[in-house]
Image (cartoon, rainbow, N blue to C red; front, side):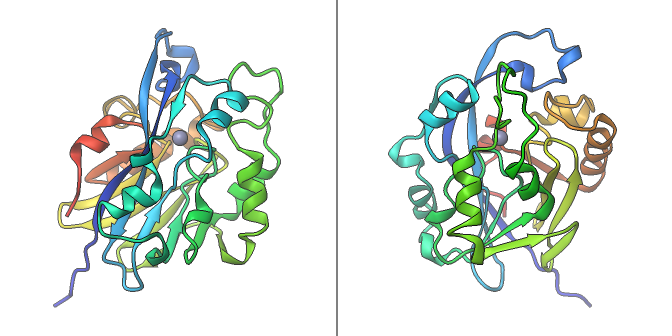
Length: 260
Ligand SMILES: [Zn+2]
């Protein structure tokens, strides 16, 4: 007779960005040259024994996003600030005990300092990749720092270093809440967060999948990956394990709303 522990997931709308649609489908097969406005999401997970968990925390500064990575306009209204989004659910920033980062691209780890009491869980290989990114300066989008903001990396190394929890591989942080490393997919140390809910297993997939129908159901990899085989294996694994797939940049994630 086991007690099944389940969690509640709330999407947080932390900004919006205009990006090229080629990011949705891997380069050589994409003919779509249009642009779309996409959300930048984080997630609040409630039900962990030591307090609220946040997954990803949005971008540092919409202007930096455009200037450094040469993407379209980005925005973050006052209502989309991390603290305001948490307040919608009655959670104060100081209450958050755990911040999990799927990866360290500028739109996922720009507000770590806003959660003053959270340990910050990230894969060690991801921090290493972010510190020494492989972007040629000539890259039309992404640039030399390849979507990693030097200011975010610097902040994690100091002053946030003492709060960093660098994990290596898969790790069950709490019963029914686990980080799974999918190396060399969207980034070298990208992890997905699997969460048990009353509606089944939810996967917070970061940017491994951008759209559930294209990337998971049709198994077409999205536009950015390091190793195509690793990416295809990851997408198949997510399809097999998850009842609910939650990409960061899909309005459908927001429309689905609260889970549990
Ligand atoms: Zn992203």
